[in-house]
Image (cartoon, rainbow, N blue to C red):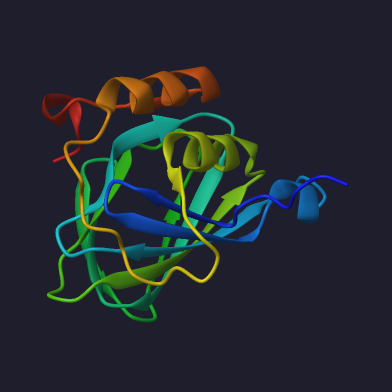
Length: 157
């Protein structure tokens, strides 16, 4: 019998809790709850082949989507169409939480679990950074799954 997959990962100030992997949804989507530290988020990126949607569960976020900046709060929904350049930052003084749905989800499943650090079941606190992130490793995983992480100069403004 195989060991169960870890369901919680830490990546770039985000605690990612998988509620459903593609293997559990008939390869239709990945459902991830993202707890984000103030000032942290997702770097500017884009990807073909997956839609991405965010529902704000708690806190305040700034989203960049195709050159537009949108401030969102609890109860707001953000749809990222396939291929759209996007990023988000937690702008509140406390950690924020997002529900993220990726369809069909395989790209984000691989990216989050291979670029992130597996955490023990039950982890609820975002770990403090223990040094700078391993950007070359993160970029390598992104490139392998078809995600492009944009340099700040290329980011939506």
